[in-house]
Length: 195
Image (cartoon, rainbow, N blue to C red):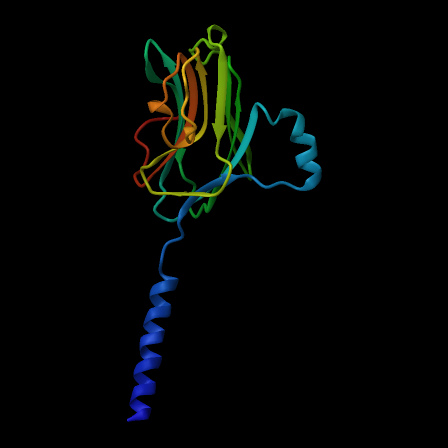
């Protein structure tokens, strides 16, 4: 009897271990980590430059990075870059340079980088009293198809902004000017060419 109980226990543990090893790694985004020397070199640019790493799984077929701007009382997609995820790619590094006037988006991989530049982000921060911004500061898991805010910058005029997480829902914060960069990972092949 003890022998059969031991065999059944071993079989159950084997099945449980197989199920655990078959789970897909989670999608996540986090600030990039650099050596101490590189961090020191980048320090003077940290107010307008952000590097993030996305961890992907086999469901990820396409990425899309969008630049959003607040104008005429609503958020509008100012531009985007998107591309097929390279086969067996487990990560993606993105660099963002976001000021109150312009934005550069970089996709960095082992072959170099691709860049999209927006010389005007389409919103007027000069007419605002205060500019607040928030960006991804820690590892954040997300799901396929979920839009993740990497950086949001809002201009306000004497309005009270509730202390909240702009990276969770920048569109619901009252503002008179704004820019945000988001990323979405999709599980379908791209239909359009990169812009």
